[in-house]
Image 1 (cartoon, rainbow over the protein chains, first blue to last red):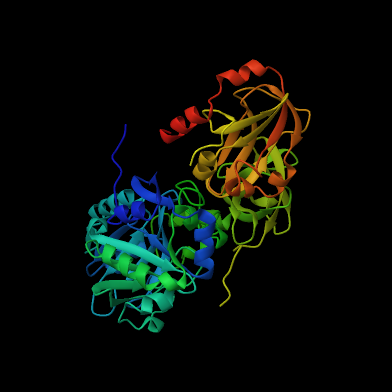
Image 2 (spheres, rainbow over the protein chains, first blue to last red):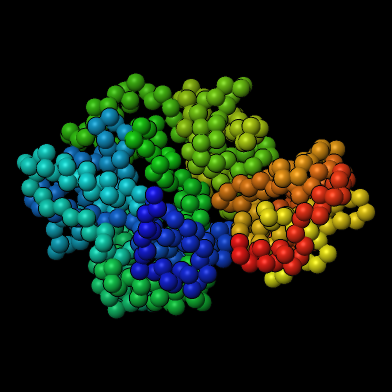
Amino acid sequence: MSEELMNTPLTERHIALGGRMVPFAGWNMPVQYEGVIAEHNAVRTAAGLFDLGHMGQFSVIGPDALAFLQYTTTNDLSGLEPGQAKYTLLGNPDGGVIDDLIVYRNPVGEEGYMVCMNASNSAADSAWWFQQSSEHPEFDVTLEDISPKTGMIAIQGPNAQAITARITDADLDSIDYFSWANGTVAGVPAKIARTGYTGEEGFEFYTSINDIAGVWDALLEAGQDDGLVPVGLGARDTLRLESRMPLYGQELGMTISPYEAGLGWAVSLTKGDFIGREPMAAVKANKPARKAVGFKYVGRGGAPRTHYPVAVDGEEIGEVTSGTFSPTLGENIGLALIKSEFAGIGKPFEIIVRGKPVEAVQVKVPFYKRES
Amino acid sequence: MSAPEGRKYTQTHEWVSIDGDIATFGLTDHAQSELGDITYLELPDVGDPVTAGESFGVVESVKAASDVYSPIDGEVVEINAAAVDGPEVINASPYEAAWLVKVRIADPAQLESLMDTAAYDEYEANA
C-alpha cells in the first residue's frame, strides 16, 4: 500500500538547497540540509527558516464559534481578544487527546478563529469537528478545513525579527507572544504570528498557498548576512524537545491524560462543559497514575529513543516518549512517562538502551530556556 | 568521491584494510554521510570475537541508531578509543582517523568475497 506523498509549494526549493527528503505524516519533507546539529545551532544563535506546509489549518466562524471551540477543546478561550492565540487540546470523550492545537482569534475586523493542527492529525481533527457540529446543531458555526489553500512557514531565532523587519510593513514590536496580526510580507498579504516550536523568538507566517514560496525566497535572501539557514524536521525535533514542547504521538495520545502529560495547564475544568471533561477531572482528582518527567544521562550509552523502557531496580516503571542527544547541552536528554510514585527531580532511574541499562537522573524542564 | 584503493568493502558500507594477519575496520564516507551528525559509538572489548555479517558495534546520529557489521570473522585486538570519546571524527575522517577496530583475521579466504574499490564505487553510486 503506497500512497503518494504530498508536496508543499517549497519541495523543489528543498531539493535545490540540498535537503534530504523523507516521508513524514504523508508529506515529502526535508529532514535536514547541512546537518541537524548545524541547523539546530543556527536557530539558537542566528535564525532558521522552516517549511510548515504539512501542518493543517481549520477555520471556525459564526455566532457560536467561541462556544463550539470551548466545547470541543480543553483550554479556556473566552479571554482571547482579537489577534490573540492560545494553546489548547482537542480532547476525546475518554479523557485522552486527539491533537494539540493553537487557536488564533482573528485580528480586529475579522470574525472567528483559525486553528493550527498537526500534519498527522489534521484530517482526523477536521472530521471530528464536522461530526461534532452535525451532532450539535445548536452551535451556529461555519467550519472549513483551509489547509489546502493556506501556506505556512516559520522563521525562528534571535535574528528572526531583524530579518523579518526588512520585508514587512507590519510593526513587529506590537505583536506580542502568542498573538498575530495582518501585514504585508514580501509584497503579499500575510498573517504574522509570534508563535513557534523552538524555544526561540520568531514568527510563523500564514499566507495564501500561492504566495508562500515568494515569502520563503524573500526571507532567505533578507537573512543571508544574518546566518539564516533552512532547517529540516530533524532539528525541529531537537529544538522543541530541548524546550520541552510536546509532540503528538509521543508525549500526547488518545490514551494519555493531559494531567499525565504535564499539560494540565492547558485544561480548564472551570470554564463549563467540554468533551473529555469528566474523565480528565477524575484523573486530576485521583492523582495521575503516570507522570511525564524530564531526564538526562549520568552514565554513558546510546541516545534515549521513543519507547525505550525506563526501570528502577530492574522493575519497568515506564518508557521514554522522546529522547535525543541535545546539541545545545552536549548531553543526552529525554522525556519519559513513568509511574507517578517514581517521579521527582533528582531521583535516578535507568533507560534500557538495546538491553543495557544507562543511568539517568530526573531534571527540571525545560532543558533549555533562552535568555530574555 | 572514490573510496581509497587497496581496501575491501562490504555491502553494508564498512571498509577493511589488511596488514599481515590484522584487519582494520571502518565506515565508508557514504555511510557517515547517510547517517549525518554522529553522536555516539559503541565498540566491542578487546578479546571479543566478531563474526562476518553480524553486528560488532553501534553508531548513532542525532536521528537514529545503526548497527556496524563485521566484514569477516576474527578477534578484536585493539579498539579506537579516541573515536568512542569523539565520534564526530567518523564524519570528519571516515577512512583515516576514524578506524573503529583492529581484528586478528580468522580466515583470510573470507576477504575474497568482499568488494574491491572499483566494485564498491560502482555499488555505492547505485545505492
